[in-house]
Image (tube, rainbow over the protein chains, first blue to last red):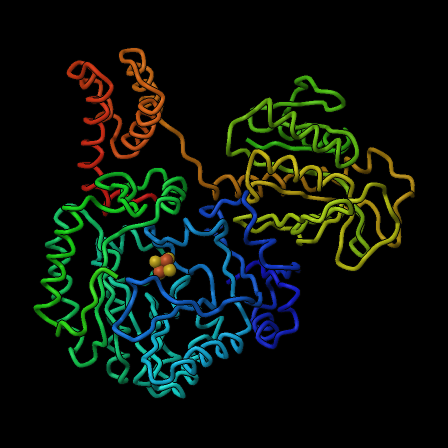
Amino acid sequence: MFDRIYIEEAARSHSRTRAILDRFPKAERIECERYGEVFNPKRQDFRAQKQNPALILAEKHGKRVLPTPPDYGLGGDRHFYFSHMLNCLYDCRYCFLQGMYQSANYILFVNFEDFIGDIEATVAERPDDRSVFFSGYDCDSLAMEGVTRFADAFLPVFERLPNALLELRTKSVNVSTLLNRNPIPNAVVAYSLNPEPVANALEHQAPSVDARLKAMDKLVAAGWQIGLRFDPLIHFENGIAVYEGFVDHVMNRIPAESIHSITLGAFRSPKNVFKKMEALYPKEPLFMGNLQLDDRGQVSYSEPIERELIDRVSARILEHSDPARFFPCQ
Amino acid sequence: MIHFATALHCEAQPLIEYYRMKPSGGVGRARFFEGENARLAVTGVGALAAAIGVTALAQRHTESGALWFNVGICGHKTLELGEALIANRVSSENHPERFFPQPPVTSVWPGCALHSLAQPSAEYVDGLAFDLEAYGFFTAALCSTTLERVNSVKIVSDNAAHPAGERLDKETVSRWISAHVPDIARYAEALQSALPHSETSKTAQAFRTSVEATMRFSATERQQLLDRVRKLDALLDSDAFKSLNELLETHGDAKSLLKSLQDRIDAESLRKTVAGADV
Ligand code: SF4
């Protein structure tokens, strides 16, 4: 899976580092002082690296649990995110990660115990609040479970923190960690979903929509709460009708009582991130037309296009769902 | 295109022959050679000479997308004489920054950390190769390209059993390097097909030239024209692109032409977003 594994000095003797290295005996091991030496240099080509990313094992210092931007929430009292990993196994053309980082290499922060300590401390600050923790902000939460054992390590922690909610944001069908244990009521397995033509064109390397739906069926049967994330909505010819049919298809399939929450949002990106994505893929139609720079410095669809997309797809979702579970425009 | 840099002519000779390169001048101590698919600089010994030679070669040929290879000899404690390695980390005794090459494909050689010294040394360290040029080569090559396109392939010429300082003849060096040239060529081909490259078509270039000859553009408008032509070049097949020439007859000024081009981009990208993705 990896030809090269970079090992940061601080992470060298960590038990998780040793365990991962044992699982990939053939990978070339390259030592570095700090992960930034490998990950941050400017003269890197994200697109070229995406063809054969290396794994970087490092420790995360400084702030590990951060508040989400104000419009990013699921109805909790407080919302946070944390990133045990940077970059993703998949290669969605709309993904902001490709415009965020210089490198497509995966960083895994092996010091899970420090993340866990910070999550526990954050909950302990206001134990009566309902605190939501998003885990798939800079990666897919489950796609690399076979390497990271992230869910395996964090679900027991949230089991002890009933007032906290963990969102596992994913497109992965690699759900055996979840199926092999009892579900917990305060974890939601949130699937990013787009209709098949969009997934086929733009969600490279990700499991098919059908495979995701099958994984969701299994999780539902096992008692897990599901999140539906219709995000990002993409503007394409006859797209609204396709989205409406897709919403019907998904929501008729997943029982309402298993749906924890539904979110949606249209494609948008900070200007500097967009510029980098566009430079990486100069022939990508997604980055070419019907877009504008809005007054918040975001590149987004022009107002009437975005409004119609959001309104029509929201209306269709609300035909199936209790409004209390619906969080549009995240 | 592949750009090679070697310190010595005897290191270069097998590459010059394989790629059928001919002398093409020089700058200072650096001597250049050029063939259809490759160029080479014989830079002279040491990091500074390597940096100067590579910079001069890069300035002569500014096209982006070239691969860069430093090929030469090195010392390694345990590898046999004549064995090859590829640098996976390049450091220098004089600079704190280190380089970590990021090849998108794997090579046949073992990866090894490479440390560039100012002088040859017979003190070997486990797991580390020593040379004199790679750091200077990387420093200069990275001014014109990215870490995925820069490589240092080294052939072991001294080890603990045969330390640096023992007499080394040019023929032996050429023979050692020559044995690895087919692998270098295969690796370079694999890299070339793995690395992204995008070019504007001749039709699009011709369209832009004739538009610029017909109308006056401000600097901003010129940039917009470049950007829109690039997008339409990706969105339209060549017949559809040629039909854009009709716009020159119906539009008298830059502003209205640019608007029509953008309208066409909006319409085409709407159609192609789920049908013509750039993978
Ligand atoms: S699955 Fe999510 S994180 Fe991964 S590439 Fe796609 S959008 Fe990015």
